Length: 82
Image: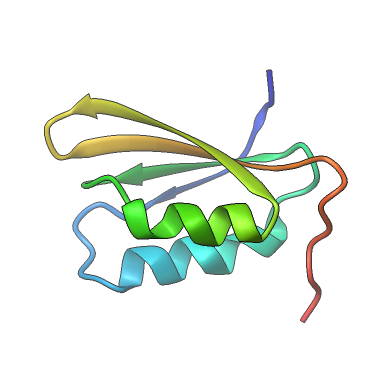
């Protein structure tokens, strides 16, 4: 089981701010590391972007208007330095 490396809470932010914040956090996740996101909705549009960049995700609906998304960098996927 992966240890959570970073946590961000995007609940209450207006689109596209939640996606921007999540995508900006991805380069900071080490291979095998996990980003835990607290969100007020399921970010369906995010999943394809994550997969194309070498991340896996698991979403849990905690309650109405609260989703917990664990985003993990696949081992072997590199972060792109800017």
